[in-house]
Amino acid sequence: MKSKSSRREFVKKTALGATAVSLGAIGFSASSYKRIIGANDSITLAMVGCGRRFPSYIDPIAKNNDNIRVAYICDVMKERREKAAEMISEKIGYKPAVINDFRQALDDKKVDAIFNATPDHWHAPATWMALETGKHVYVEKPLTHNPRESELLLEYLRKYKKIVQMGNQQRSAPESIEIIKQIHDGVIGNPYLAVAFYTNSRGRVKNPELAAPPEGLDWDLFQGPAPRVPYMDIYFDYNWHWNWHFGTAETGNNATHELDIARWALQVDYPEEVSVNAGKFHYADDGWTMYDTMDATFKFPGGKTIKWDGKSRNGYNTYGGGRGTVIYGSEGSVYVDRGVYKLYNRSGKLVKDSKSDLGETGTTPGGGGGMTRLHIENFFDAIRGKATQRSPIDEGGKSTLLCHLGNIASRTGKTLYCDIENGHIKDEEAMKLWSRSYEPGWEPKI
Image 1 (cartoon, rainbow, N blue to C red):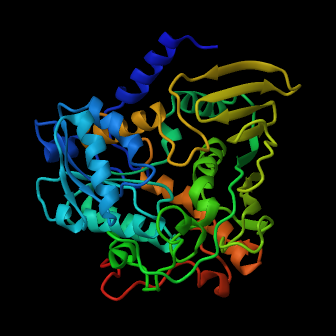
Image 2: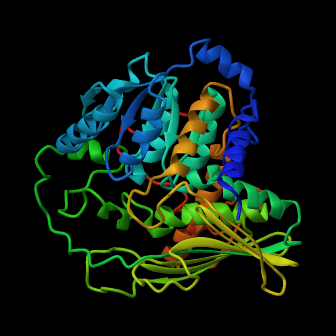
């Protein structure tokens, strides 16, 4: 087991050791950001979306209170934005402006960056709108609501050259960084299979009914870029996840994290084949409108495979934990979770393990903890040109695409065959789900 001092030294080296900002295929130097941000390291933020994820942002912002200023708290629900403002004010010592429409914050040239913690259908549009006004963006997973939006975001990034970090915080976990590097260096030989998993025991969702939007909710702005639909009483708060109009199912909600680790470990990009067995097997008559269980297989060139075992409503911990990834290699295997890894030799003997004291939560809605703090601090330092960005969106987009491909295979009932250069599906019917229609006036402008 590693000592706490060695972990602290590792965090210090990984967070501050690199000085060039890298966006993978889209690279530009840290010095360019130094010129943009100037000698003053202060960053002014607008917090967009005050749901379950919001509390996890407070500590890293408060810790950096001397040079991070929160100018706006934005949410389409009055009660929630006011509660969030009170919550963060206690930590930072002042109360930000509290607004309904985040576009007001985008118009403020003093705002340097936004935190985008909106529902899935807002992730990409709010991000590209922020880029258009010169803001950096920390955007929660999944990066996009559909595959085409990832392509659009890369076009926006090339044009506006800002930092966009996806909230797959395990990319900043010291234990994950360490063991993935060891895998790449050959500690388990040739890695050929990664099994990513998530287990939860979510309960019944009431059947939706037409209703007036709750008091204080701007339902029109909640829908934003999505074509207009009548309000149903389960749409607000969390249950939009289980409706294709706004959400991306459990695969977009949670597989994004684990499939990202699997893809990172195997060093693969786009799959050549995707097959899925999925269904709604629990509470068959309730308001959940999509599968609740998915077994997916993604085959990549070079004989490498990623499997996804997602069980939203069956709490049996097949792999001994609620979430994680198991990577198999020719000479051993690795179990990796958010703050833990266990390294086994080919005979199955445990040869090394490490456990973090960062305290990141696993299956609790909203999550949060030390890993999120490191990921947010990396975002701040990347803006300043002081650190290498941990989760650039060209990488985040590839991991999010696996989620979308699993969903498309589920919805079409087809095995998908893909172009390994860009992930495009070689099926005309399935490609209809590659993008979406937008409410008139909300279409991308690039």
